[in-house]
Image (spheres, rainbow, N blue to C red):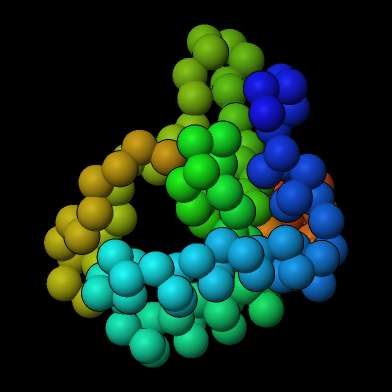
Length: 129
């Protein structure tokens, strides 16, 4: 429906057991639909199901009826007061080879662990770094 509510936010706010139950119709669609079966190997389905059960992600249908994978993320926007500059990660360097392995502009962030609140994910991110 077009009710102005972001249902994915509500879904990600549920505990992992409920998210797994809500993911079942989308997971079954992936398993039984011939077009998806030809793309995914059986091991991919098993890995996805394991990820869903662990609470790392969820599956749902969007408003167009397409399946989407949801992952809870917490990001921080760090701005220097004096000049408004933002802290962002612009790439990754492999410490073994000292070469660039990825270029992407990102704010500092962390995937939420099973049943972890966004505030706790940010606190964990700060503590780990």
